[in-house]
Amino acid sequence: MSNAPAIVAAQEPIVSTPVAILELVRGHRRITAAFALVALLFLVAILSPVISPHDPLAVRPDDSYLPPLSPGHALGTDELGRDLLSRVLWGARVSLPVAFVAVAVGLFAGGLIGLVSGYAGGIADLLLMRLVDALLAFPGLILAIAIVAALGPGLRNAMIAIGIVAVPVYARLVRAVVLQLKQMEFIAAARALGASPMRVVVRHLIPNLLNPIIVQVSLSAGFAILAEATLSFLGLGAQLPTPDWGQMINSGASFLANDPWLAIVPGAAISITVFSFNLLGDSLRDALDPRLRS
Amino acid sequence: MGFAHLLEVDDLHTQLAVKDGIVRAVDGVSFSIDAGETLGIVGESGSGKSMTALSILRLLPRSGSVVSGKVTFKGRVLTDLSEDEMEAIRGTEIAMIFQDPMTSLNPVYRIGLQVGEPLRIHRHVDTRRSIASAVDLFKKVGIPDAPKRVKQFPHMFSGGMSQRAMIAMGLSTSPSLLIADEPTTALDVTIQAQILELLRTLNREYGMATILITHNLGVVAGMCDRVIVMYAGRVVEQGATADVFARPEHPYTWSLLRSIPRLDVDVDEPLKPIEGSPPDMTRLPTGCKFAPRCPFAVPRCASEEPELLPVRNQLSRCWVTQGGVSLDSAPD
Image 1 (cartoon, rainbow over the protein chains, first blue to last red):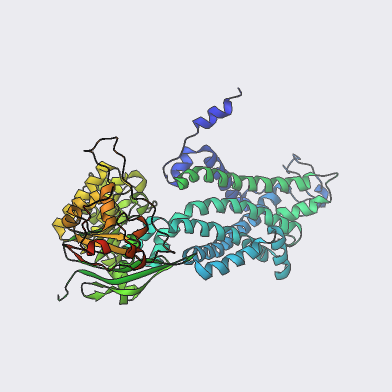
Image 2 (cartoon, rainbow over the protein chains, first blue to last red; image 1 turned 90 degrees about the vertical axis):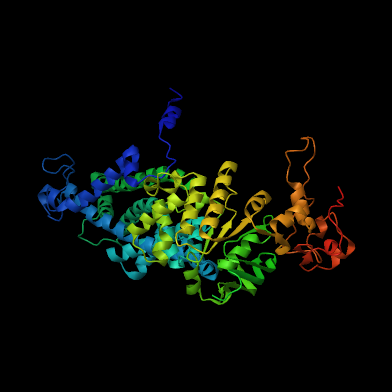
């Protein structure tokens, strides 16, 4: 069966024509699976008050350190007897919105920088790109930690910090695509037919940017989840007693030797979430790229 | 309306800033075109023909600028208009179509929507009516099955159909001048013929003047009333197509015509390319720019640049023919 992978590869549909997102979902199982996973995560976040078996903050000292699969506590309890399943479900309500807002901050600020930089060029491009280079000079997480340290701990500042870290990614992505699109004749044609520069940007450039941006959004959502967990783990993000995955790992870390599930359960939640977003981003990229190249 | 010509270009100078200095991409070009006329601009890559067109529409790349000269269209001096006034002229009075139809259409929009865009920009027509107009325009430019085709995306169009769609877009506001920049270069030969035939029909039916930019002399011969031959940013020969083709009065035109492979000679006959390569635009020779490649060059050609002066029925920028020497006494 040494040639099995080759056969599988050959059977994969080759997307050489642009298709609507919905058609992609139908034609691509990986995208469908990834979409389903991400949708499930959002559903969990929205429905957690309804589907959680317990109050995530209810302290029951008698029930502390129950292992997973205990009656009434499917994933066990922590050192204060709080139900881990409920806490993990509620944790989605913290992580997903943070990731969402952070990505939105990065996309909006970075996209604007990239658009101006790529379309205007010249001195504006030079200055903006040096600003972006300066941001890129710091490792992402270190920069986020530094920003939160400066602004003060808390979820709102964590969102801002993670958003700022995402700015260079979007600025460079958008700039690169805009530079490429600017050479396309339909931009010149639109100008030649009397479209104003604003109309060219809004009607012709931005719609063509959506594909690469959609891919990047799902990829950086994964990063944002991880970054938020890291900041919370370090005590810079969500504050007690908010049930947050990073913070749960932090408090669970003290009990790794005897009761490892305290850290493993939130860790698994983070892994699954990051994996879902990365799977979505990767599969979208694979599906959309051939079209961009053609 | 009291203007002499539809479009008049007078001593146009356009410069491009490049890494190695300044390129005089268009250097003192003058010509005019009347309503209903077809003018060909011929030259090899980098001869300034596209830059001339972009200068007229004021759509030069950022590095380029018109440094002097005047472009007058229907009595209005385009070179003096504000950017807003210019935008109102582009796509209504003057339309331009480009070389590569496959990238001239925005891949994310349905074609009907794009073809109707000039109507929405300039005539403030709503989306539905602009698409209805696109259906009519598709019929005019010979795209079959128009009601279905307007709903398709650019990737579903072949090159020839895309170019027809581009022409339809240009026609939507009934401009009085169409500038076609190498409209058939990216198409295969049978489709080229169809597109040229379409342009000719539209030119005749709507009295729309056409500037046809090309490096294909055959296209000029079949399409144009008059022709301008450009070399290194200058007009080297200008005249009625029949005159220029029958008896070129500039060695560059002469060489171009001679380099066309012919079907009626022996296949063993070697091709006759123009020796050398186009000059480096940042370091142009003094004197005649074609002199280094010219089989007729005399010593004076290398030191003094000739003017564009009448020779027989046309204008030529050449010391040799201006001196009365015939290019028929060809050195081989």
